[in-house]
Length: 167
Image 1 (cartoon, rainbow, N blue to C red):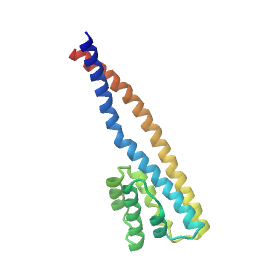
Image 2: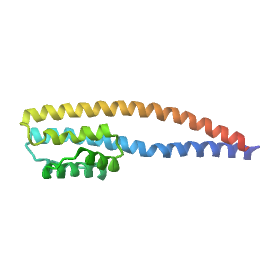
Image 3: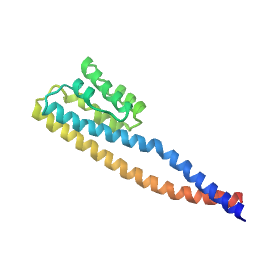
Image 4: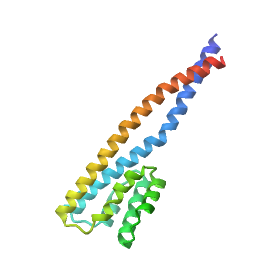
């Protein structure tokens, strides 16, 4: 009897852990999207108030994820070369962060006005862009938490069902 209880608990815990591992990549993606938003705020402050260049700001910011740094390095390269391809950037950002096209295109909008606007206009545009990105992240995070909550409940039920069938 004790062996059955132990096996039952082991199966339920194993199933639950599989679902936790499944959501780890999604948690990381959400963290990277938040870091991109934080960098835009940093960019706004240092480019408008401190009058630093994008390159100087990029080199002075401490990124938690190299993937996010790679995305902004690509953006800087696009700005320098003048060859701005939204589809190419979207694909690159998706490979690096795993974020949706809508988010990637919002980040890519930096190339539309960065370097060509006056300081106060740039400040307003970057603030607006940050608020749009934060709104998108908030909606995405809410949807993700609901989905995660549902799958956590399902994982427990599936674990129990598998354990009952096997025992």
